[in-house]
Amino acid sequence: MSSPLAEPDLSSLSLANSLLPQDPILLPASENTSSLPINTSSPLPPHLSHSPLDNQKVSAPFQFGSRHLLPTSSVYEFNAWDHVPPPPAELARADAQYAAQRAHPVSAFDAARFNADPVRWWNRFYTNNTANFFKDRKWLRQEFPVLTELTAVDQKEEGNEKEEQEEQKTRETTASILEVGAGAGNTAFPLLKANRNPRLMIHACDFSAKAVDLLRASPEYDERHMRASVWDMSGDDLPPGVQPSSIDVVLLIFVFSALSPRQWARAVRNVHEVLKPGGEVCFRDYGRGDLAQVRFRKGRWMEENFYVRGDGTRVYFFDEDELRRLWSGETRGDDESGQDSDAISKEAQRGAPEKVLNPAPCENAQQNPPTESPISAPAPSPNARPGCPKFEIVSLGTDRRLLVNRQKQLQMHRCWLQGRFRKPLLPAAAAAGDDSRNQ
Image 1: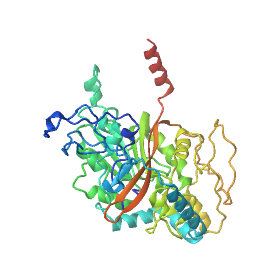
Image 2: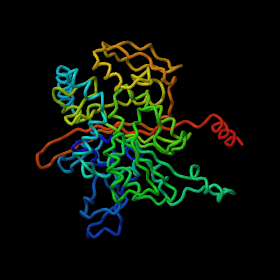
Image 3: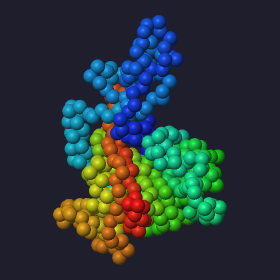
Image 4: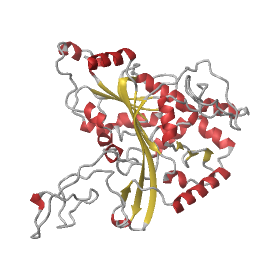
């Protein structure tokens, strides 16, 4: 369920690096070919690839997230700048565009058509766009270091007396990654290429059968380390071949935005169920105010921050607080009944009034009761699972990136959200950890 955009992944968000203090990049003495005296202890601004003193290229690798637009900078010097908020004029233009979008929403007939069978539109997308639509996400291991750990040479624990016996227990020893919305493999295949762990297994899932066919047909597909299957993360079942509490990392890269808000609750529950205690979600998706949202025209707005593209696929634009509440268990999204948007849309097609509740608080959450919007809520489902799965928010940030077309002198403001959410350890395991620390 990867999201189609003309420029979906130009480079790293770099929140992993940009939120931490950066070591200054120093000019190596070996690169001093100038006859002028150079103070090699003076830090070189991290966004420069060449020393301003002698125009020699520095040997230290460029760090994404470190190119800051300063008052003295020339905006057209580079094709991208990090952490640049839109100016007031751009914000005013975006607000006017949102008002126009709301004034001309998608028709009720088309909304029901797009929501009733979203897999149809994704199958059509992957029929028309194969593996060369998206760029490979080679930046993933830099942004999410846990992926570097899982793909390292070996994951054996030192000092394990029963090491040989443990190696025979595949489910216990395998380093497992579940990628949701695997698309044509632009995440999974770069991970496989960089992998040095003989026990790595990537479960690459997409609810488009066409996308899964592309994965399996690729020459990079290796059944020793990868299993591709059709799976809807907002459905009732777990991915084929995946057991509860068996996954180390779940990758949600530009996929959660393809869901209707009424599908979020079930999707979060499924992710929580497959993760091992202590396992993590690596999340990256569209943020509110992104250029992709601002540029939508008439007839694409379905509900607040939720749109349908020209190819029939859907996209939602998030903000930090919304994601924090959802993944920490404070709210469970709009689906307090367990019924997804497909069922709701089918009711709408039969003429039943459609209703949606504002995000409902979980049990024991200190929230006000939900209020009804003009759309009415579906009847509770007997299969609804009570309670909200709770994740620890390891990190969550907004990255605003200014992209520059130097030839046309254009400036484009992009906004992405990136986070890491951890499934808490079991109470017994946590208590054992506390005891060991107290000894």
